[in-house]
Image (tube, rainbow, N blue to C red; front, top):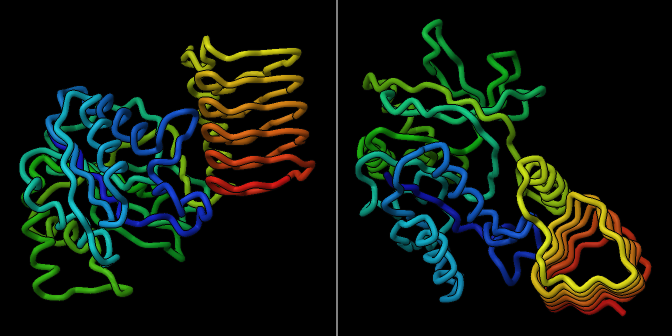
Length: 336
């Protein structure tokens, strides 16, 4: 089994945080988005993952590549790196990893997190992972027949088709079939909105008789912009807390401070005269003094003083001293 992860976009809507770290490597509840994603996919697959192929931008750098390979190795899988040099769409991104496109595989876009308890139907030719939503006209949705098979993909339907939104994760019994159809999309230059789309490959597979079925997830979390990412951090903390996960490191130094769970607090964090939580993640080595922080995401090795933060997102190696409330600053920023 393989997992294919297109993640070449840096995430412009999450700037400044993505100027130094690609969006899929931003930690949520103490673990990079893409790390959580592949771990949770592996749980649903319930079988050994042999390879995780990451499609990245060539400018991501050696440290990012090493981090991604380590994520794959943590699952006992080989990590493979491919490059997408131009943002030419989902279909093009997948085809950048064509040397890995054989056998059973999951294709998953790297800015998606989910919580699922379904058993993957590995007998189907393909499974499109979906989430029931209240406002289907804002999403791409699947249309089903009476046999619970997907007959059509409809993008942002104006009239009701179904309330099952496509979350950007797909299982293929043999991903080589998708590869063949996407190659035709590239060869025939089938472009929509300036991009080669995975949906054209899927529609061609369906036309050739391949059966697609839905796999329903319980929760679906996005990390599109700062506001949504902070909310996703809070939701993930609550899920992990309910599951009994250990979220507060034993090496945290606490002086005259209180923590309201759920919170993730990393190694060697120092809290002095601080009120933390709920729904706060603080990365390793960060120092917080004379501050109240809730519903916020703070990365590693930062210094926060005299702050009253709610709905804040602060990067690594940042220094913040002040009484602002809603802020979004990236790595190495200084506000005094």
